Image (cartoon, rainbow, N blue to C red):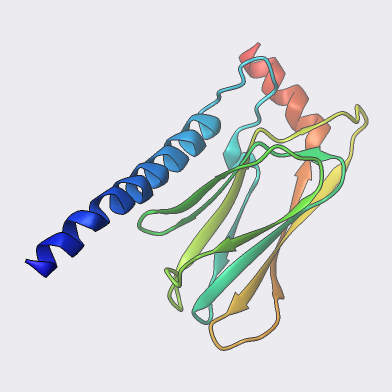
Length: 161
């Protein structure tokens, strides 16, 4: 009887937790699939970096330089999407807890959607990916990617507008 009381008392907590997870995932999915049609969206495949892990990862840090706006960052591995993340900002460092999903020897991809800049000149921007390994205490830079923003925007507008 005591077990039944404990289980029924946990039901509201479990419902709130599950519904919250579902809401966050849905919100991120909408953001990644183009919820802002009035803005320039570059193809996410233009802005991605693939990284082969040497050790098991504990967390990931993505640095976006000042001057860029990013609406969505996705981290995927070879088998399934690890985490979608929605953010609109001009400069930030994004810490992602990977829950140790990425095993040594797996390739994972960091991709961005909704990348924009107000600068009309031809520029190359760089974003960096840092990782903290399971047995490590400090972040190490494991990947760098360049974004040729203005030429990419012009090409995108020429094709799709």
